[in-house]
Amino acid sequence: MTTLKDKTVFITGASRGIGRAIALACAREGANVVIAAKSDKPHPKLPGTIHSVADEVREAGGQALPLVLDVREEDLVKDCMKQAAEHFGGIDMLVNNAGAIRLQGVEKLPVKRYDLMHQVNARAVFLCSQAALPWLKESDQGHILSLSPPLNMDPKWFAQYGAYTTTKYAMSMLTLGMAEEFKRYNIAVNSLWPRTLIATAAIEFEVGGPEMMKQGRKPDIMADAALHILSQRSSQLTGQTLIDEDVLRDAGVTDFEHYRYAAGDKPLLDDLFLE
Image 1 (cartoon, rainbow, N blue to C red):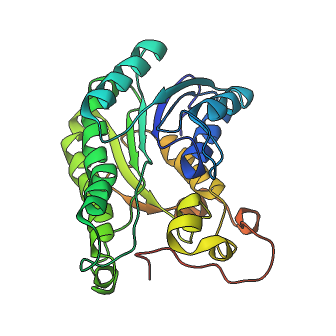
Image 2: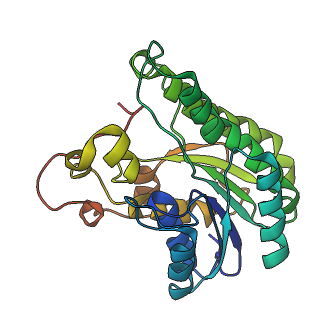
């Protein structure tokens, strides 16, 4: 295990939800945190901007750099990576957290929505990882962590929302490929996915609404698992598609009740792609 103190962590989609939680977890360890997201101005329905999270990061003990980033824009991604590296003197870790979701079948899914999911999910992992690589190669603790699931090829995960599934699986396949490709640079590449539904805006507005959120966990569980992964030496853990609960159990955590989003005895819902 190593420390994240003074390490620079670049997090996409970091203005709310899981990205924000990971940013704050890293900040508590004394990391430099790049909060990269589109949310420059307050949203009427969704709390949080890159600037509000930057304030929280500083309050938690980290250094913050808020950057406006749309992960679909190649030149902007490259420019943000360069800004981050120049500001903090390098980049040690990249967390590919930005995501797009629409649980709809091929028959009625608009092509532009498929394009969005492909660009924000799979293509962004490729683009951001490639853009960060020159600085990750210089780090003594280089990590790429993408929020994507294990590869479960049961047809049921493709039948109703094959477009979303294929873009998320593509992220995990890139994890497997980059782990082998970047091994010679001593860069760890892994994926992380939640055992249960995580209560985020995506669940509230795209999937099941506020009631479904009550059967999920807080983003903190993903943040704690991500922190544990990023704290590993690069040579010790790579090429894995990991589950948050399993990561934390291996770290000695036995009580998960405090991660519940809502008090009560409603059963937690398993996340997609898990049996």
